[in-house]
Length: 366
Figure 1 (spheres, rainbow, N blue to C red):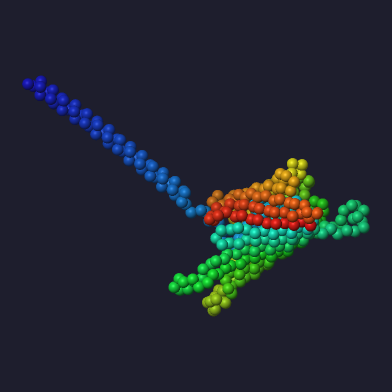
Figure 2 (figure 1 turned 90 degrees about the vertical axis):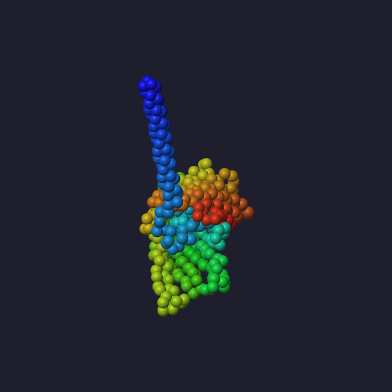
């Protein structure tokens, strides 16, 4: 009888121990599951915060004159806008006023941009080189001096802006217009060195009776090391600013303000390989608002009259959130009785836009 009671008691103890182990195992498994789930939640929260984090602010984004820093024409935009050291092909003082002394023939070019959000961006430019002769220089087989001139217009704006009354009803459509008129002169001081100056007139029509004008200057230099390498230096938008007065709208409550353009300093390099018919350009741009931007691109003469291009603009070393803008394009030139007629096209990505940028243009060299 005692033996039977003892055996039953032992069985109860063994059964209880087994139940305890199972319960402990379940508890441990529950703890591990909860820790794992918590870890996953924390990871997802951290990862989501990174993805949704606000991009780093850049003062350049709120500075005036943004349209004038978008590039000029299909050729320049298609090569990443790093053309300050370029001395071949159709040239424009927008990239460097000193380049006009290297222009072959008379260059006329115009361009039109297809942009989203009812924006417009258009270009027109004429560049010519002048050679001044003298009897002494004729004996040496070269001109006494070489000068260049380049004049152009960049037109931009936004249209189809609704004007509404206090009840929210549309009364009319408004538009803005921002324009840059520039004239550049340059002189070639030697076979290797050229210096140029651009005078820039900005005109901004913001509203019906609110407008602003500003005058600025660019200074540029190009040094030709040899047939393959050029170097350039630029200072852009000296003294450029907008002055605003809103008293025509608000009367005595109107305010006067002044917005300065960012001052840009650029150094550039060009490598040209005429044997293999390609060239590469690169540029470093520093501003007084904390940006340090690299631009680079290339051009390849793949077939007679046909040029392919590609480049990258806005690679900001100071802000990894700054949108990089790759680009590509082409040109086709046709010789018609000694006159070169060309068609240009460029494509550039616009990360924060509903569609990308397409630029078409025509150029004449005579």
